[in-house]
Image (cartoon, rainbow over all chains, first blue to last red; front, side, top):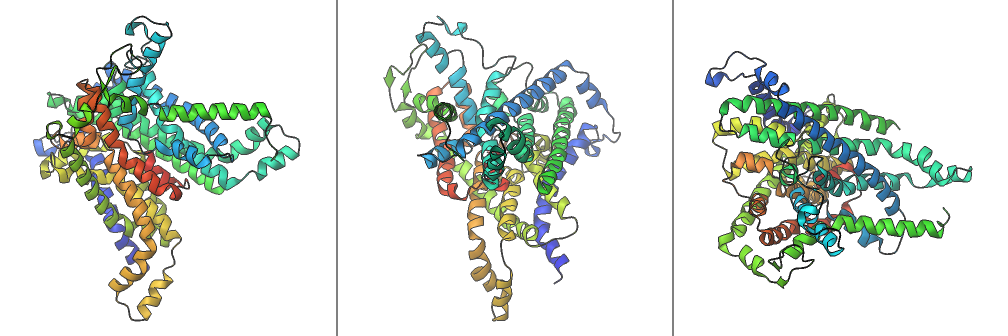
Length: 285
Length: 273
C-alpha cells in the first residue's frame, strides 16, 4: 500500500466525523441564516435574517456585552496567569501539593464554577454575609450587585477563576522549557529584575501567552451556561440570546438565531487565524 | 540565580496563598450547602447541619442516579468512538509528512476553538430529520465534536515519538497484521490511549449546551439536572450534585498529574472542560 493511500485511509474516519458533524453543522447553519431551505420550499436565499439581526438593539447590546466579557476576562486572566506561573516555577516546600491545587479547577466543569461564584458573590452569598458580620451592610440589598449585573462582573470573575490555571499551566511549561539562563545572563549584564522579565522573559513567552488567550477569548465568546447562571436577562450574552431566539415559539425567528451563530463562528474563525499566525511565529522563534 | 530578598519572598508567599485560596474558594460554599439545613442570610455557617441533601440525592426521587448513569454512558460512547476514530488519525499526523497536513491539522483543531453553539443549531435540524434528537445516541455523537480533536492531538503526540520499524520486524518474523497491532503497536501507544481517553471522557462529561439542544431536555445528564435544582433554589441538593459531578475530574487529575507537562494537547483537554 502506498503511503498516500495509507494516510488517506487513516485520516478518513476523523475527517468524515469532523466534516459531517462540524462542517455540516456550520454549512447548514449558514444556509438557514440565508433563509435557504429547499425542503420547506425556501429556494430564494436572502439577507433578511442578517438585516433583522444587525439592526436589532437586542443583538447589538448582546454583542457589545459579550465582547466586553471576553476581552476583559482574557486580559485579566492572562496577566494573573503570567504572575502565577512566575511564582510556581520556583522551587519551594510543598510544591507538588500547590501544583495540584493550581490545576484542580481545570477539571471542574464551568457550570459548577458558575454556581460557586453565584453562592459566593450574590447579595445573600458568602461575601454579603461577611460584610454583614463586619457591620458594613444591614440587608442583602445593601450589598453591591456582582451577579446578574450590567457589567457582567460575576461572569468575568468566573472566567478569571477558571482560566488562570489554563493559561498558567501553558505558560509555566514554556518557562520551564526555557530555563532561567537567559534571564541570568541579562542579570549578570546589569539588568534589573523587572528589566530581565520585561525585555528577556516576556518576549520569549509572549507567543504562547497569546495563543492561549485566543482559545480563551473564543471560548468565552461562545459559552452558554456561565452567562445563563450569572448574567442579566437583558441584555443577555450572545450565545444565550441565540439559544433563546432558536427555541422561540415563533419558528420564523430561527434564521435570525442561525445568523447569530454564524456571527459567533466568524469571530472564532478570526481567532483561529490569529492562533495559526501566533503558533507559526512561536515555532520559528 | 541568587536568593530573593526577604520582602520579595514574603510578597511571593502572600500572593501565592491568595491565588490558591481564590482557586479553591468557589467550591467551598457548594460543599457547605450540601450539608446545610436552612442556611439563611446573614448566618456565616449553617445553624443546622444535616445529610438530608445527600440522602435525597441518592434516592430514586431526585433523578440523580439516573442522570449519573446517562452522563456516564454518553461519555463512554463518545470516548470509545473518539479512540476508534482518533487513533488512526493521530497515527497519520504523528508519523507522516504529507501535502495538506497543515490544513488537516487546522480542520481537526477548529472544533476546539469554534464554540459548540455555533455548529449545534445547524446540526439540530439535520438530527431532527435523522431522528437523532432527544436520543442518547444523538447526544453522544454530537459530543464527538469536542472530544475527537483532543484524542487526535494526544495520539499525534504519541505517534511522533513512535518507531514503526518494530512493526516491520514483527511482520518479517511472521506475525499477522492483527498480531502485530495487538502485541507491538497497542502496548506502545497504550499510555496515550489512556490519557487521551480520560480527557475525552471528561470533555464529554462536562458538556452542557450540546446536550441541552440535541437532547431536547429528554436526555437528562448531571449538569442539566444540576441547573434545574439551582434554578429551583434548592442550594443544598445543588451542592450535593455539584460535589458528585466534580469527582471524576479530580480523580482523573490525580491519575494523570504526572503526564501533564503542559503541552497544548493535554492541557487543552482540561481547558475546554
